[in-house]
Length: 288
Image 1 (spheres, helix red, strand yellow):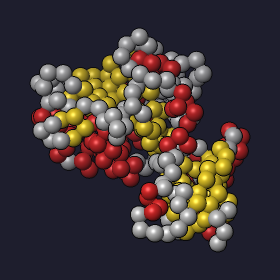
Image 2: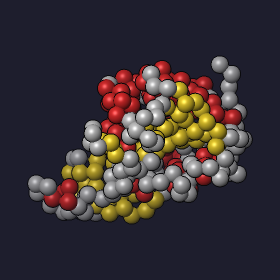
Image 3: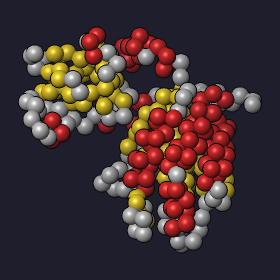
């Protein structure tokens, strides 16, 4: 085959979900700049698609099953074409709510590290995410990587999710314990999302309930909560410097993932999610 075949698809969780050509429709592949199939050669040239997460792109290269060789991202589809292609190729998912699940840290900047268990915030949530993604039933999950929740939320807004959950841990004095969820103080929907999350997470972990906490734009974490155009909550699941908290969080990853997935699906099913271009402060929610 030539090295100039044309592919259209969507970036999902760092990989390329193919819409066309037809023989690859529905397949998930990786892109590499290498042009020959040699052991480890494809991995060395793998293309990082993080900046295109949740977006429709055109790719050119050579199809080889699980990989596209000599790959090059040619163009990103505009909003009108993207919406059309999603409605054609993701008919079932278009009806589902979309959750941007945000990692508050990256591999190079992993956040707080518990030395006794040799685990960081990033490593903990990276493993948990894989389980949560498989367990949600009524929500489309987008994984988003970033190194600080004090940065601009524009990268989330471009994904156009229905709601945002940012994942973090706390740290204090090696003794403080518990779970809390933050939301923007003017957002009724943000508060509702935080309450749903705290309900499931505290019920499962059994750690002290530090509550759903309102934050202003001037508070720590406030920029993301205030200026995201979709309702947003920040989960502070446990205290990473408290060994008892960490041990409990690591005890049963499947059980914790179940709790997260149930909370996310309840938000999708019970909360009426509306977007605004002026900040995360004008939302409605359905009564249970």
